[in-house]
Length: 358
Ligand SMILES: [Mn+2]
Image (cartoon, rainbow, N blue to C red):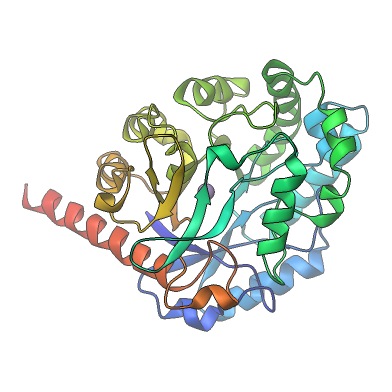
C-alpha cells in the first residue's frame, strides 16, 4: 500500500507541499492540471513543471486525478474521436513523466453532488452533507448552492462555463440510458486501453457520488453489479477501479469490504472516507474512524490487507476543523485528512504486526 494525498497545485490549494511533507507516510501526490477543461490538450511543459516540483519535495507524482472526459465522448457523438485522440495524447505524455494511474469518472453533467458544503456536526466541525429533500426538480438550484459556497476555489466537475450551458447539456443527455452510457464507455475504453497497456498507465474509474441516479441522469458505477459489468467491458488489468468508500457508502446495500475482496486485483486506487447515513437516506461526511459513521473502515482496510494490496490509498474528503473552512477547498482541508492518514496507518500497521505474530 502506498499512502497518497490529493493536492490541487501551487496557488490553487490552501495546503502546500511543505505541509504535506509533515504528515507521516505520504509518498505520492495525487495531482492534475486543474485549469484544463475536458477535451483540452495538456502541454508537456506544464506536466513536467508539476512533476519536477512534486519530486523536488521528496514525493512521487504517480497519480493524476483527474483527466476529465468530454461530454461528447459520454454522449457518443461523432466528434468523440477527436476528443479521444486528445485523451490518448495526454496519456502518452503523462506516461513519459512516470504517471502510473489516471483516475477518471463517467458521470453525466455533474460530478459529486451535495446540498450543503458546511453542515455543522455535533462537535462543532462541519462537513459536506446530502439532504434528499433538498434536491429540487431544478438542478440549477443545486448549482447555485455549490458554486455559491465554494468561495474563490474552482470546483472540479462544476466548471462555471459548463454549468452555464446546463439546459443544453440536459437536452443532449435526453434519451441516454444506462445501457447507452455503458456502450459509450466501452467505445472509449476500446480505444484507450491498448495505449495504456503499451505505456503502462492504469485507468481507474471513480464510482458515482452519490450512488443513485439524480435529475433523471443515468449513473452507471454505483453497486457491485455495475462494477462487475464495467470490468467486463474491456477485460484488462489496465481498465480498473478507484474504489471510493465515500461514494459507494451512502447506499447501505453496498457491502464495500465484499466488493474489495471480489475485485481487489482491479483496484488501483483506494479512496477512503466515512459517511454517516441517516434513517431517511440523508448522509454527512464524518471522520475516518469506523465508529463515527456507517462505513466499517477497519473492515475495508482489512479486506485490502488480507489481499496484499499494493496500490495507492488516499484519505478522500475530510471535515473542516478548527475554523479552516474560511480558507480551504470544501472537503479538502488539512487537519481531518491528516488525522485520517494516521487512523489508516494505525490500522494498517496493526494488521502488519498481527500477521508477523502468526
Ligand atoms: Mn472519492
